[in-house]
Image (cartoon, rainbow, N blue to C red):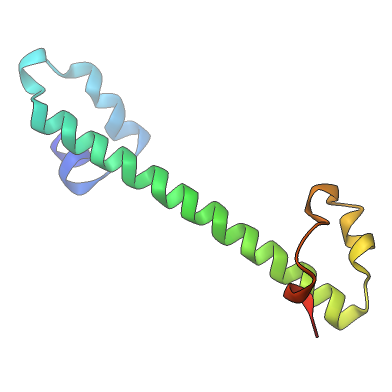
Length: 91
């Protein structure tokens, strides 16, 4: 448990050791630390997804600007993203 909570080691084989914990091994501080780690993971995932969206938009803009691809042809493979601000891809 110390490896998970203090070293933030969430490897599956380490986390699986929770089965061997006794009720006396778990304190409010331990639960709080695990929730902090979980919150941090969720924020990193959200930031990663946001960053990935920016990368995809930049890739689309590069295709438009460098290859002369029209926005509608890119939109045909990603219909939900065709309403972007035109200024984003301005040459």
